[in-house]
Image 1: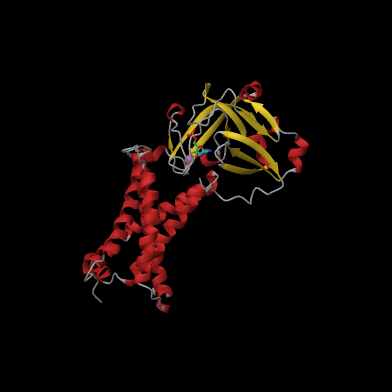
Image 2: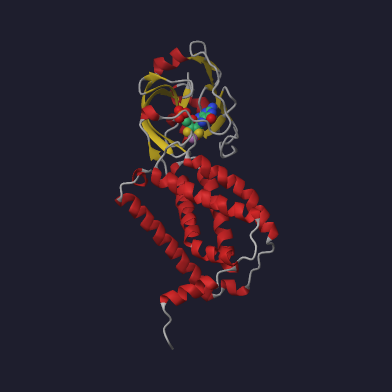
Length: 343
Ligand SMILES: Nc1nc2c(c(=O)[nH]1)N[C@H]1C(S)=C(S)[C@@H](COP(=O)(O)O)O[C@H]1N2
Ligand SMILES: [Mo]
């Protein structure tokens, strides 16, 4: 039997590209949406790291399939606008994802790569549904699960893992921003550069720090009351929009403000903003939740949550409720909270 050259083999492989390539791409795009959704909603670094790794691998998997998908597109007798839009959106997601990882946190025309990435992904869902409906049903064959096919899938996964590892290595060797990011994917910022960040649609409220009061389990406290009890706390603010900052805040732990017996009897502690934004924590986290009035010694700015905001070391940024109005103990378990606020 004559050995077949690598070039001939890859040419044949590309010529066979079709149903299975498309199926793999469908699975990878769905996987990207799921892992991206998990990464967005993970409240702590552990799950965020797992989701980030899965998201990166799936993204690289899509890139590995580019030659095969190109062969399919090249052969297609006609290309529909909706399909081309879907293609453009997938490419936008891939490119913005790479810019975020290797370019670091930055804004171009006031927009960050992650905003482009998430925005394109949301629009993509619509075109993905159109595309899937048009090509429905996806034909599955018994041979798709044959040993040979599983071997191909395994080889493909190893290739994706290798490309991922190589990209990570290149990022490090070249000293790109990818080298200094956290396992959650966030890039470092100095405390002075912390941007005022809105989760989705919240608004900076107009508050007077000298008259504002925070209700802590019914007790009304002024900023001066809180500052009288406050001390320094080092914490890492890690925002899902792709940056983090290690900084010193000035605050009071909730355990210093709440009666220990009442706290022990409750199931959760809810921290509410004047805007309606709120987060519910398990009561055993109360000693790690701080009502803060200062950042690096300076009073908070309006955008940073003045006069009082939550500092929640170990929780991702969207748990750090700004413009705190009340801290309430309740019988409701902390698990009965949506993963993230809808405002
Ligand atoms: N009330 C309220 N609190 C909020 C937000 C918000 O939109 N509304 N954004 C959260 C997000 S996503 C982050 S990352 C941090 C950002 O804090 P910063 O504005 O000081 O950077 O605040 C959190 N607290
Ligand atoms: Mo955030």
